[in-house]
Length: 194
Image (tube, rainbow, N blue to C red):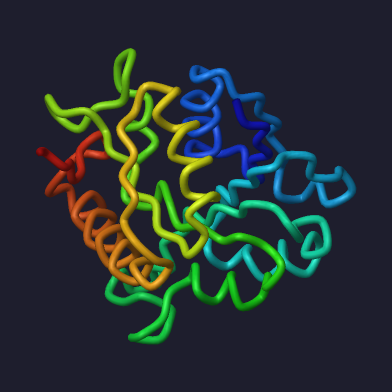
């Protein structure tokens, strides 16, 4: 299976680690302030707030070259809870890809809450299994992440090119604002059915 480094030890970092280790991947969790510790994973999940991406790129950009880098952020303006902090035709993932041209950037996990990743033995949204949507321009990188997620017991779907990150971030924005307004629970969300 995959060797994964997760930068960020909060709820999402812990939840993603539990899914991936359940599927047989080896996972190292790094606090975002542990810049002195090298990143060893072939897949690097950035389980940090959007505002931290710039700092991580500055501190670890060289280490991330050639790696699959997974952006889970939702660039929500947390002061107003009324807009995204990226251009209307852009995304946090596109900004990250531009800043890391030698990395294979993916967007994933931003439309799931930590609670839905770890609900029960297999993550659930209500009575439905959790689906991780994955967008990116590198089909091999997407296949590697999708395989690791599926091995961990969740459904994973290729959501298309990295251009789809904009729609994924808009969906994540909607989900976060609904949960913050207590219209859905933090173990709720959106699910896909066939």
